[in-house]
Length: 394
Image (cartoon, rainbow, N blue to C red; front, side, top):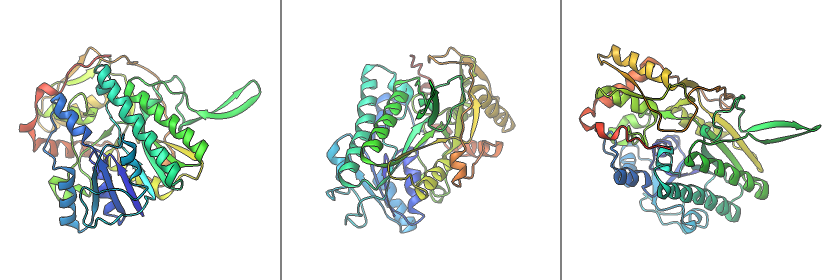
């Protein structure tokens, strides 16, 4: 099976590439280093240095004798996207430069992933909108023109739903109105321009499925935590990138690093904001199970990709408890909320679909947190307190 990973240099993209490569798939990754360049431009530090995508692919090949083909290119350019389907692709690195063939599955991570980044100002909002929507649209038209049977696995976000005062179903809602029934996409109400682009992604994909009978699985993912996977442990240079700043760092990852450098855990406002979370290893599982049981032609299949829910207060207290057992004096600081969001709300999402197709969850245990502390402590000297909180407001 041939897998094309869009955004293969990212926090989730690179672990996904190793995961599938290690299981015998033919893997090609493409990236334009957006995340790395944005971190440099905004001067937000990563926890540890990361080899380039080409260097990582070479290290992977040396250690495993398995090939991950690499393309460095901007997928918002339609010709770059189409090259993977019209046989004109030029690999930036490969053991064998022969065309791998049209992909059976495309895993789409290639989007600007940060709500704070999208809200810095109108320029960053424009970058987010342009990148995210053009990449998705380019993919859909390439599939229409060259390969309507290719299965797309798109990483959406639970942030599309917002925090409605009703239970959140898995993507769809049955409506009865004036004696008639129909099924519609679940009402969505994003809290940032990044999340708004993900809503637009879903609408673009639903259009393409209806018009061209494409087959798409949309994984509505919650915030991810962790850094080690079973494939990265063979060499530290294969670890995925890890941000701990306000712009690109997810909350659990940030709290771990804040604890290590005696920086009070930054809980926004009342701390009742509740979301669904999952371990990075479960992202890999979910994508794999979705690939093994693809959507049908003409189907937009939606799963809510979370494994458990926590409030910001819950997470701060968990990290505080584990940190204290490790000898840290962990303080929690409720700061003025820089975001416009409900700080106390109802939140009850359904997330059964991925379990039904075979995903076995990892939960946020004390042992998991201790493992994250252990890795982060190796790089304590790299941590910059000045990048943890920048106060981006909206």
